[in-house]
Structures are given as C-alpha cells and as structure tokens.
Image (cartoon, rainbow, N blue to C red):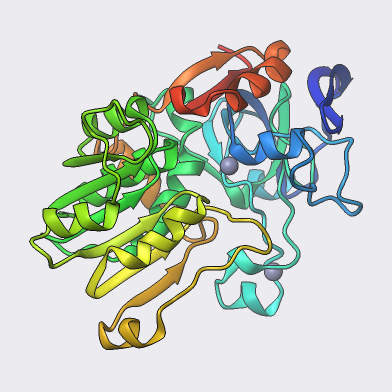
Length: 360
Ligand SMILES: [Zn+2]
Ligand SMILES: [Zn+2]
C-alpha cells in the first residue's frame, strides 16, 4: 500500500520521535495490519531507557517499538491471498516472534529458541505506528465480539498460558504466584480455570493484590506495606500456615525479584513444580538446596515466550475463562507514547498495563 503513516521512532535511550514515514511495503508472505491497539510491555520500557539492547544487528535504533498488538488487515500478500487465508477487513492479533521455520529447533517445533527470529518491535519495526507488516503465519483472526483492546492482551496472555501449561496444575493443588503485575493477574485466572484448590498471590502492593483477589486469588500476601492488613513478614511461614505444613504443590514466578525467585523454592512442598517466568539480570542466580530438592522430588522449569499456544489462548479468552477487563489500567494516544512510557515506569505499584490506542 502506498502512502504515509505516523510512527514513534526510537533512536537511543530516552529519545523517541513522532515521524511521518512510508507505509511498510509487504512481501508475498506478509500482510499489512492497520494497528488499532498496542500494549506497552515491560520490555518496551526497558528498551526506551537503554536497560536492554534491541535485538537489531547493532543492538540500537532507529526502530519502532511495540510488539503486543491488534488491528485490521488492509493488504494481503500473494501467498496468503492465493490460499484464501486473509482478506482486507479481517480483525486480527499477531504473534510477534516470527521464527525462521528452517533451523534445527524450528524443525522440532521449538520456535521460542530459534536463533533467527524476526520480531516486530524488537528486531524489526513494530506496532507503535499506524501500520505494521507481519508474516501471514503469525496472524490470528479474533472473534467478532472481542474488542481490539482485549485482543492486544493476547500476546502477554499467550506467554502466561505457556508458563501455566508448564506448571501442570492438578485439581485441588495449592498454588503460589509470586508477582501481581499484569502477567501474574492473568496467571491467577488461568490457574483457577485449571481447577487449583487455593491460590496465594504474593506482591508488594495492595492495589495490585486487590485486583488479584477480584480475579480469584484466595489469599493475598503483601510483603512490603507494613500498614496493610495483608502484610506478612515471612512468606514461607505464612504458606506453611495456610497449607497446614504441607507447603505448595505448584509455584510460578512472574517477577524478576530475586527474593521471590529464591522464596519460590522455600515455599515448595513434596513433588512440587516450580516455573520461573520473570526475566532476571544476566548474572542473577537461583540457589537450589540440592539434597532437600532431590528428596522432595521437586521439578524446576523455566518458561520463555509463547510457542504453540496462540489458538488455545484465543479460545480461552473467547470462552470467558479469563477476563482482561481489569488488566488495562491506562490508555494513551500514539502521540503520548514517550510520556506514557515514563508514566508506566514511575510508581509501578499503582498501575498494571498501559496501552496505546492507535486507532479507535
Ligand atoms: Zn511483551
Ligand atoms: Zn528457526
């Protein structure tokens, strides 16, 4: 499609410019998406502040950030067109992690570890723009009654789904979730939907924990705000009390806080499964007590991205098993993106998820 579009271009830490540029030209295997809503991810904030290098060849901008988005198809490349897969007007969401499909990992379906991924917003131009191009293999139609805002949460929900699939919750399990950010709030609902007996949610903010309670957490443990009725100074003791000494069957850690990563092991009972999800620093380590972990037959897993779960995620949402209504707490225009990123970074204890409404 010919024409110009508005886009927020990231150049270097804390330098982003709203620019007019050519609409991306699609290849035969791509579709052009008119962006409707794009979520602001923690990684977008990290890129903006230079806390994490971009996945571009030199680790730098210029690059359009944004990888969690929904929109409307406006142009269809030759291949998806000949296959009859998409048409202009289709309402879609996109899996940004576009693997190469030909390396050894891809050949075995291990798409999340493909070394040749192209990811809009990370290694290629992304969704903080009026248009974004995507390979047709990574575009999914959304139900007619699903809003674009809800559909923009499918990417983080897919990541949460992959992690919770690995957690392998059994009906009746006592589950501990460390972190009540937007991912933790989504995980609580997925875990309840799988029949968990009780879910305990641990965080540092009553505001976020309160949302966790509204979506189904049975116990909320605030480890920071001493004046809070939910304050606990010793999470391990409290989980022991709540489980009658049995400790947790399942523990998931959607936070990078070191204390949580360590306590996840301490609250685990016999035959427990722990899934690590939040991204720590490159040199952070988790200490595992070897003997007691072996003798308790504990399983430790890690979860990365969201391979092979997109249709499941869309069906989960469509079936009403998870509500994202309480996830989006702040909305911004494309013009406001820089201040939006600054705002979302400041006092994270009283906000969950910000989205950019690119087009109503
Ligand atoms: Zn993200
Ligand atoms: Zn590959």
